[in-house]
Image 1 (tube, rainbow, N blue to C red):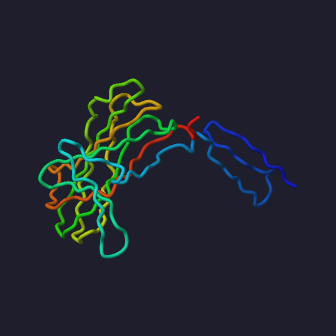
Image 2 (tube, one colour):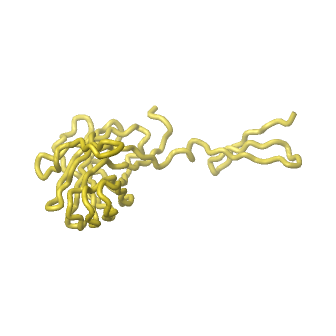
Image 3 (cartoon, one colour):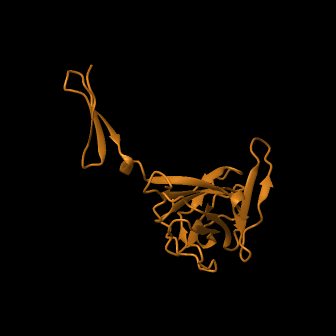
Length: 206
């Protein structure tokens, strides 16, 4: 019976190989260092709340004629409006920048674009929560399909830097806005949720 040898190399890979015989293949497996990277979490509109000042509409449940009912936040076309949410990232997060994609719909046929922006701040134990958000980053505006209640998915945003020097065991507060100066949609933008992307540098929270 052929034996299998496990060997590591400087590239951070593990190679399983058998003695050289005709038809033998080599299997290379990634090590821990190659298994961490970019991940995403879903933040539904139902996990967000309108800002007290310049806030979007309250969470609404919308019944359509078929299939799913929606839990949405409506953002007006006439002025920038905002909603907020919080995330306590796992320790395996690298405490770096994040990106996002917005998922939304429009009730109507206008094909104008909608632009979404995100900013954030990290708050540690004994830090004041009364701290400003970091720089707002706006994703490329996404045009509505022109069909009422079609789902629209924005492009992934550029890097969002979280203010407050984030570290482990902190709460990150996020503010999502509709930037009407960067879009052309005449109707309300109905936010369904966002996909938030972050990067890990470990496999567990140990």
